Image 1 (cartoon, rainbow, N blue to C red):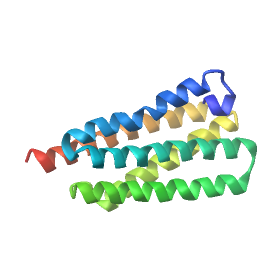
Image 2: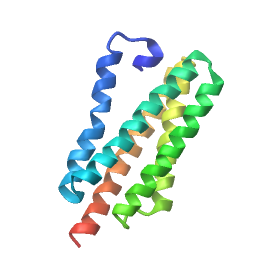
Image 3: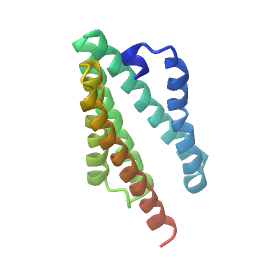
Image 4: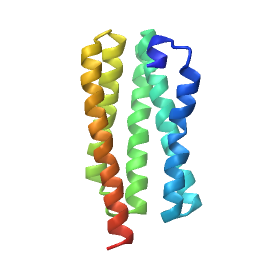
Length: 150
């Protein structure tokens, strides 16, 4: 929202969003060690940075930059999926890819709605994103439970 609407808190909210990556890393370090946690944190940071690049390009109407960012965003999602499956076989590539791609599609849909000033739609999509994020959290938790506790 900060990028789309040029809000004065954009830097602060971006910094808070980027904090999600080391927060994930901290949890992962408990189960997988610091090296793997850092690698995952870096992948998530890339994911967030590319998302911001995509929104900025779309807002500016730069179709080439937006297309490039979107391709890199999906490639990053594939990297995340393969990484997750490598460290935990309970996170299947097929299921994880579908989940991450749905997340990307919804996030893009929300940004497009906001840029297009279709706020009703952006709110509806945000609700879907929230539901998706909770399902993703459940999948992460279930994978850890299956890997380490069953």
